[in-house]
Image 1 (cartoon, rainbow, N blue to C red):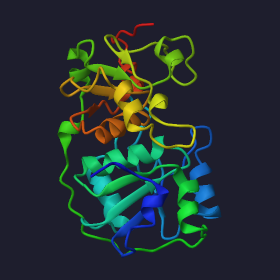
Image 2: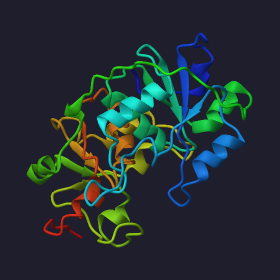
Image 3: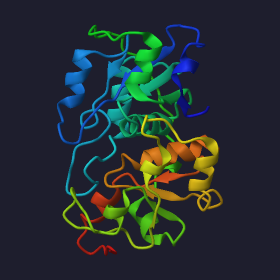
Length: 271
C-alpha cells in the first residue's frame, strides 16, 4: 500500500467504521503541546497518540531519547484505542515526522493498511471542513500484531555497516558537528552518509514528487537493507516512508539512533 494519502484522495474513500484517524501532533520544545492542541480541536473521530507516552518506551541509560515501545506496550496501545486488523489507519500531525514515526510503528506491528496524511491536519481540515473537541471512545480490541523485526537494525548492525549502507537523516549542521542543539556530543556515526529527511518533504508537509525523491535517493535504491538513523529514531522514519513510496521496503531503522550511539562512551563519532 502506498504510504501516504492526500486530502483529495480522502474525498473518494467510502466512509465506514474501518477508517481510523490518529492525531500525532507534538513539539520537542513543549511536551504538552500535542495534547493541548488535540483538546482544542482535531479531525472528527481522531484519537491521540503522544510521542513520549505512546510512540516511545521509557528512557533509560541506553536506547536513545525516544526508544521504541516494547512489543507488549505497543500491542496494549493498539488494543486500548480499538484498532482492528482491517482498519485503514490515517495518521496526521502538523508537519510530517511524528506521523511518520507512528506509521513505522504500525508497519512494524504488521499492519498493512496505514498511511500518513500529507499536509497534516490542515489538509484534513480541507477534507473534513471542520475540527471537533469531541473525544471518541472506541471499544478495546484483541489486536494481535505480527511484528516485523527485520525492519530494525541493532547497534551491532550499525557497527558492521560500511559506507553507503548507513545514512544519517539529520540536518547537515548536526551531521558535520557544527551545530548540536540536543545531544551532548556533536558529530555523526562513523561510515554514515548524510541524507537529510528535510529534503524529502515540502514546506507544505507533503512528500516531494516521485522524480525528486528518486533523485534524492539515487544512491540508496540499489543498496540492500540500508540503515537509517537520526537523533532519536523519529525523523529517520520520514526517509524510510519516502523510500517505501519509491517501492523500496527493505530499509531498516536504528531505533536508538545517534542518542543511543553516544550513550556508549567507547563509540567514536566523526565530525
